[in-house]
Image 1 (cartoon, one colour):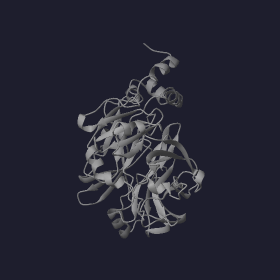
Image 2 (image 1 turned 45 degrees about the horizontal axis):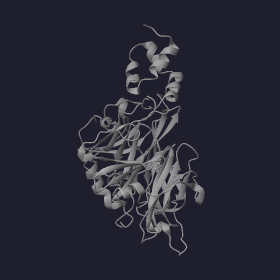
Image 3 (image 1 turned 135 degrees about the horizontal axis):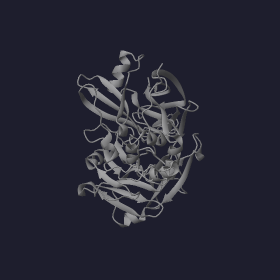
Image 4 (image 1 turned 30 degrees about the vertical axis):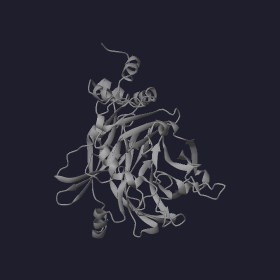
Length: 436
């Protein structure tokens, strides 16, 4: 039975994207309707409040699963397995090493090492099983290639996208090369899907920065963000990141440095920020860079959460939007934990890892309600956003990084240990260079 187009739109918009992808094969008419801008916009609007599948990807080179925590069964996609299970592809040659470098707007960049040690880089859309092997930059010298392989002041983890109406229309793969550990100069190597070529860009930052923390980045709104120390905040005794460095690859092409918030001198002259519980790091949530930490004041621990609202090095760059005590956690005996990420789509929810119970704590900052999910129990129960949780070697990975998150750890620079892999709200193909 044929349905009028308005009725068909109304019916199809109630199905998950997994089903929509299949419906495209029913007929030419259905494919044309589903691929139309009208249906895409209507579907995204109709399902704006529906939950999305996403995963927590481990970014520290480790012989464990790439995805350590998966959220599946969410309304928008309706997947019966975790998003990370799609992170697989078949290279043209045998490989001995595989690393996920970046996850941005449903796209993933991957490093694969051939058995002879040759580096191979891929960009892909795992759900559509579309993968493209990137050519190496033609202007890299033999010395640069050695630095790349050994990670000597060479970062290959950047991936930014341009979005239009909920669809990725282009991407840029960004590699960073710094020639000195402390410098205000660096080079970017940028591959654009629009041109299919690499270009080199020399960049100057506002002041000198220590570049030994830039092995990982977080992409957001066409910008990359790194942890950093700089000459204005560096303290040999602290050895903790003091600022966030950002670079806009789709906007004004500028490098900016924003110092972390939280410093507050009490009446007795003590710096509260020096009493933070965890080393500084950041995550992304609801389209913003977010930093949270705990601070010891008056013999109690207070959790503070900031959102980066201005890309300027001024006090008002960070907006404090949570300031509370995790009383319900402490009263329940959950005290040995460290921060993981915030929910990428709901900044009311933070994720903590409880080392004693070897479980993931989901805490709702607005309601004070929390739940603990243990990997050992094979917990695939529902979490706060209605999705099912799945674990994959999460406990082993958390045990391996536990000490690095404590403020008293002095053994080396900060790291970004986690990355969100969030599925988009619409089907989109992997952007390819225009044929010439």
